[in-house]
Length: 384
Image (cartoon, rainbow, N blue to C red; front, side, top):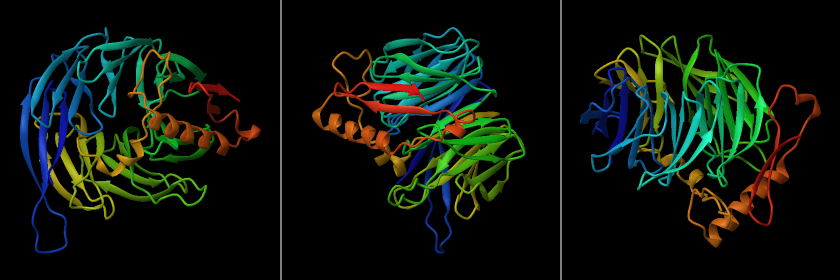
């Protein structure tokens, strides 16, 4: 099975490519890559790129204040979304139903996938939105901005649920695919938190962290949290892979000459484990075996790469399969209402709530929330 990916460049271009596992007489992984399309998508540098849950849609954001939409499965251009008055700093799809964008104008917009209508415009952060991430349930999102706040958004109602002033100026934030932890990067450090806000670990790379993604870890046993494996792309051109629970550096991937602007996972149906891809300002995309650390293939990015995304992320689709329940009075729903989704979501969040534990001594150093649902299926977030 072929896997597709998209690349954004400083030269205002979006590229699509298709990677295939090549036949080999030995046990080594061999990949062949061919170009799918080249689009002069923007009037400014491409700043961010994201793919939908199924990999069908690709969205690119730019310093020209616009978002371009592509169907990478059918190689179709859906045109441009307008709504922000600043550079598009971050984009994230929720499955194949919604897209959320954050801008230098400080706003966050929720878009409907398909008709591409603007559903809500949220007053995100003063000074601009730096990054955002959607919980796999689709019920809430976290955002960080230049105002120094971490904000929690209730996506069911399209309102701010909570905000916390943080001491540092973070650059990236991301939920893990199973939604059990999230990671915030600041300078050379990555801090991993449980959903209740308890600090799991802090890892340091020695070089400014530019990009991150999660690698598959072992399955959880009992009430134990699944191991979190982080891949961190750095300004030095290196990619550091950490076990975030033990803070052990598993390996370092070296091959880029300049900063690693984007990293993601590509999954091939024929292969159990995914392949890591990285895009760098040096103009190349590299394919890696994340287990051995061996380089597999190099692709010319046709310019100074600013971002890269995989359109084949099958390995964690099951972790994103929980559809959020929808209250009858919600302003935004990230899925169609159904009895099945209601009970699955209710069970999921009640399970989280019952398992939370708090330490009063850690309140000054961690972001602590209580998350629970009531009989109306509303989400509440409050600081403890």
